[in-house]
Amino acid sequence: MSNPVIADLAAESDQLDGWVAGLDDAGWQTVTTPEGWTVAHQVAHLLWTDRASLAAIAGGEEWELLERVAQQDPTGFVDSETERLVEIAPQSLLHHWRDSRQRLADALEAVPAGSKIAWFGPPMSATSMATARHMETWAHGQDVAEALGIDVPRTDRVRNVCHLGVRTRGFAYLMRGLEAPDAEVRVELTGPSGEQWTWGPEGAENRVTGDAWDFALLATRRRHRVDVDVRAEGEAADGWLDVVQTFAGLPGNDPLPLAER
Image 1 (tube, rainbow, N blue to C red):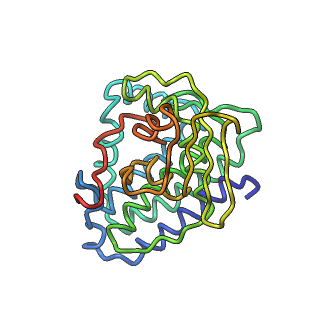
Image 2: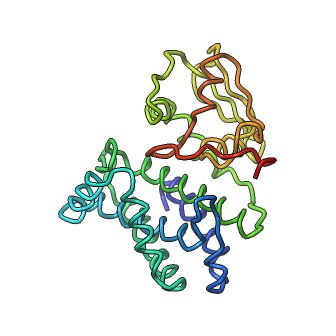
């Protein structure tokens, strides 16, 4: 694959595939979230989003239908579609997800440079869509791994998740009905390999520093602030870490500290 983000998405998907492929039917029903999503729900959600992304890239009637469904039920249509797909038998569900993610990788590679893809929010480039898909696969993979007792290998692919967490700073405030502070934030994170990743102006008074993997867990709302090695300097930086989120849509319930779970 010529696009490294698409390659990262494929690797993340293959890793999750390896965790679930050998599960029996009972294993697929393992609960992975406080809301009751099972392993099957996690894969069904990824399958649906792959198919929605393919429809968006292709355009036409299927995408127009998805837009109408989203307009009719903006806060619940994704969960409704997940519930529909989770009725598929586990091995068939896995087969469909393998097919959808390969077709999506091929479709993203074929998007002309400079083109924008329609989405439920602002249009995005192929790389931005691949970044969003990688973030979702990484986050849902954390849910599955934690429920199954799997120790997740820490790789520098997590940089994509961190990048999205930084880029969506203003959006995170918007989703809570808040106004983002008019202040630049410098972000300095250490990746699993020890590489340093930075965003924002070097001289900014507000700073976020720490472990990249932990920042990704915080930004995907898989961990509470008290459980991550991420630090804030300055009021704007500190307030951002209370609302940071990588994904579109409402933030949902705040994660509990690990000591209270």
